[in-house]
Length: 117
Image (cartoon, rainbow, N blue to C red; front, side):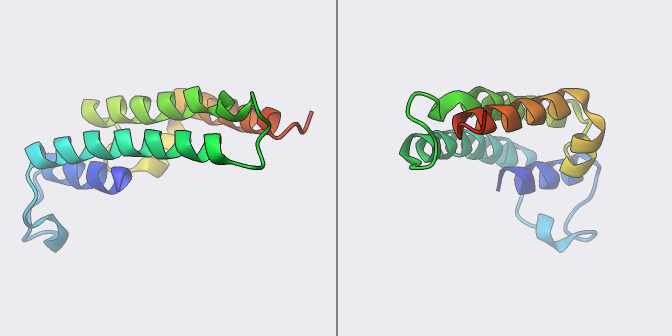
């Protein structure tokens, strides 16, 4: 939902409306800003609960990937608000060096949490 709302917000900021894209009907930038904020918080809380309750991750290492998830969400939100990548999360993943480094850090943290080394 977080990515969907950011894409809709980017479409509205690009000047599209319900005539161009019917899925935009009923949305305003103000509503989407609130929805994006709520979804970001829920995504962070859900991921934290997932890591804490996981039987696969080692105790004491379960939350190692959480800082990367938080940074990734907040960094993407920052980029979307700047107007750089809000309409295309795939483009952000391919071109943003900070998101790529964050993903690499997340992968390494998860591997460490799984005690693969």
